[in-house]
Structures are given as structure tokens and as C-alpha cells.
Image (cartoon, rainbow, N blue to C red; front, side, top):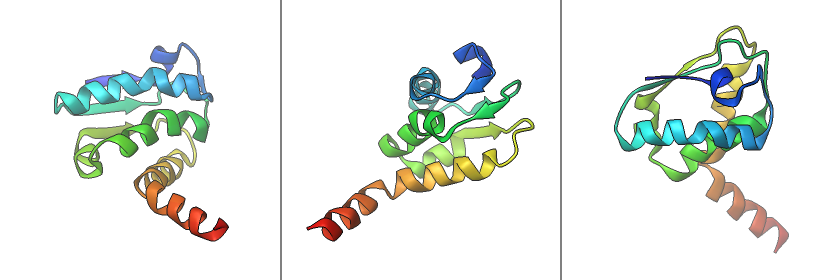
Length: 108
């Protein structure tokens, strides 16, 4: 299965949280069906971390990262630094509880 971000959000700029939430169901369906999905950024001119957190980050918060790593494939198109942004979003989601604990202990 291929999910083209531009077609889902009807925009060439993937910037907002609510747009990321529009992509999330496609990723979630692939996970629940154990299907491989290509998340394509073809035609997207800019992509914000806010968008990535609401789509990819949310997946990594809720589901098994090892399974997600085998099911989701990214087509970065021609977006510079998108791979690095996605890796950062995934890392932050995987370690979210640990980060929350560190902040809580630092402010206690």
C-alpha cells in the first residue's frame, strides 16, 4: 500500500498537527493489518515536525516500534533533512516516558 501525503492532506505543505492526524489512520490501518505501507512525500514542498509528531510520532507512542520499523517505508522525495526529522520524531516518541520522567525529577 502507498499513502501519498499530498493527496491525503490536499496540500503540498505538511505543516500542521491536524494534517498529521489525517495521515495517522492510514499508518494505523497498515499496522493493524500487518501490511507494509510506503508513506510518500512526493509533491510535498515542506514538512514540519508538528505534522510528523501527529502522524509518525503518534504511531511510535502507541504501537511496537520494532514492528513499525518493518512495516513503514518512507519515500522522502526531494525534501532535504526529512529523514533526519523523522528519525528524531521516532526517537522522541520511543523515549517519551523516559523524557517525561527526567523532566518530572528535575522539577521536583
